[in-house]
Length: 189
Image 1 (cartoon, one colour):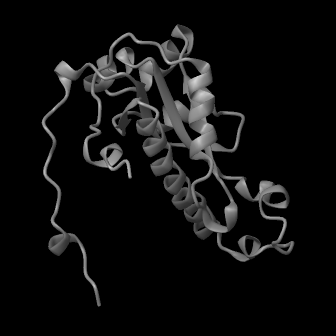
Image 2 (cartoon, helix red, strand yellow):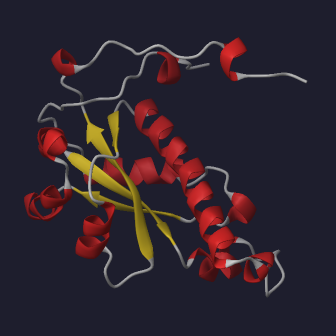
């Protein structure tokens, strides 16, 4: 078992200039897409920002304290969820009746379902990246509405968080933060 993906990996803050090849990005998605989701809805959508032009479009939405981090990352993935994820049900969940139970949900419940499943997939995305030798840095310090306006204005995608990817500058890695013990975080009843 390769537990070091969980026990040794760290959130990266700054990155070396080691490039991430587009084939690595595709291989990353090809691993992460197998994450479990509610009724196999697979609502996560990813925009991989790698070019200088795309990064220049992203930077105005980044909080001042995070600009250097995003600038240093060879790739920044915009982790989004598709608000129209149920349109893919005939392909992804052909076993489901039409209309599906999603059609009977409130708009808020349906959006939450997509958001929740996106985060299940995003957890697998991080584990997959680490298993491939990539370092990750999840980032919430940015203007989500600005990112949506810049990159997703004419789509049904909505930004959740950013994930920087590359090879960490290990001189800039913080000491590992503490975690709660089993007794503090878990119950068995």
